[in-house]
Image (cartoon, rainbow, N blue to C red):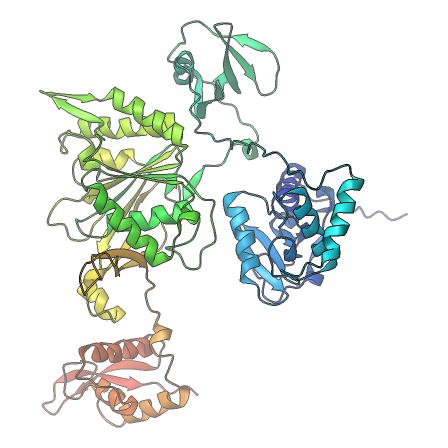
Length: 630
């Protein structure tokens, strides 16, 4: 008998596998009309074929490591559109973000767009015959089964369709009665009731909200559950119990809640809405100088949110479309319309893509003031908060953007206590309306580099928001390094304060001018509107990519033949030899900057070093010395 013991099986998380499988399988069956599969590598889909995919029918056939490999395979697009008969489209979720890729068949952008739209709108793919009268629907189904191209419908198809319908006791000449479309559910539906509000305040957990005539996410005696009004009494029922607990008629407003460790996997995730900045039930802020791009940037972001398209991240994935309320407290409505029309024109956004999810308003038409000064006292405008919450819930809004923040209050900005009250009032709106609110704020004058501390007013504003972005216009030095002629049209966005995620690299943006075509007379360009689009800082490799290895070697020989200076102001500058060899016109300032960037890139890559060498007067000067790699 062997005395060796087998190693214990690795721990597995069956709940993780089960939940992940059912979520993807539900999407496959009910949204994408496809099949649940496992992909070899979810982070590399290059060259993946149908044969490389592994069908999976139950979560018990998976391991924990298989969860990121779950995907959906959709084909036979001729069911939905007059194209893509042999197209195969694969959908996976990378860290929860959908990625859609055609892996087989003739290129069919319509098939990829169809799947992307179904995911973004959370609406199932519909066969071409969906919603047609019975006879037309039957003809289309027969045409699909026979593989007939669009427009090719032989007469015998109608005869066969009539026979099929009559056999199923359906009159082919009587159309279906129109059906009432289902009403989509949303967390922000206006179903709050006054009697529940005290219980929301007294027993509401971190993610509590009033919905469907109940307080969800309530915490009573360490249990999570919901509170309902039954026969005029507040009754609580826990998630793990069906027993009703009667709560006091007057809710106690303050109590200490015991904490016990449980399964961290059961804690709900933070509900990020967009770009790891906007988050449900929190206030966020963007801070920068006047004219620095904050307003135009928020417009491009608003269109990205409502369409689900990555307008400011060309390599980004589709996201779930959100409902956005964009409020400018200073500009008139016609100016707001100009700016949104220009952005939509630039990004080719259509009304169908917006889908009624965008709302815009001007502070000149309605009051958006949350705090007013009455003598020495600052008063929070409670009726405004109530109206704001009600409208957000009525419109089912996910994100509210307020621009500028200063126009929504009359507080003294250097009064920390007053600013904290104003910020807390906006936080109340996010909490009660279950949305995210973005406040666009200015900086103090004569600021250099903008940081989180540059925001106008006291530090209470910075401390109250969950995430703060800062906007900085490109400097002359940055423009020199990037090869940009006019830095005024470029700016960068940085996280000045992030207390939920690690800060990342800068995001660069630039302005482009868009003509509305609303002019009159012979010249009809009309208004020129600045629209913010993404811009990528050029890499060093891009600067020198057109120079071959042989040309670089020849350049090194040229520069090695003399004491070529590193200083571009010198008559012996090494860049003169580069320009001569590559036929670059140095009288053009932009071309001279390009040569300087090329030399910087080669120095950084180790092709040149700097040595101090004496000039004709015996004074040491920094010279460029080539490095020849063996």
